Image (cartoon, rainbow, N blue to C red; front, side):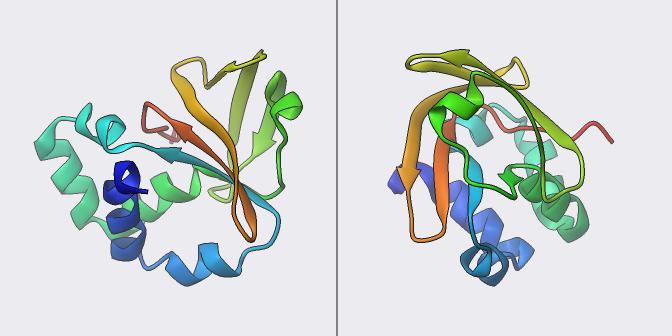
Length: 125
């Protein structure tokens, strides 16, 4: 998906391609290029250059189970980064951590359900 090219580049830079391709039954909250563009360029460049921080942020976008839209109505889910994301909403309108809107949902891939989000999620620590 061309709207996810920054995410794909970040996943490659973090060395997470195989990890994500080999994981079974995951949910990915995938930030769009516009989501990455909301981050000041200097900050984004710094994160992209720091593999450990980049890995922490990217794995925070991945939940170790497949989530259906109904699961997102009011949920708290463990991420691969080892903290939690919170979801809420109903129908066609969902948010993650009260700040990132799901712009396209429940896109199925071989091993994941993908929800495209408009804001990069940041782990608390």
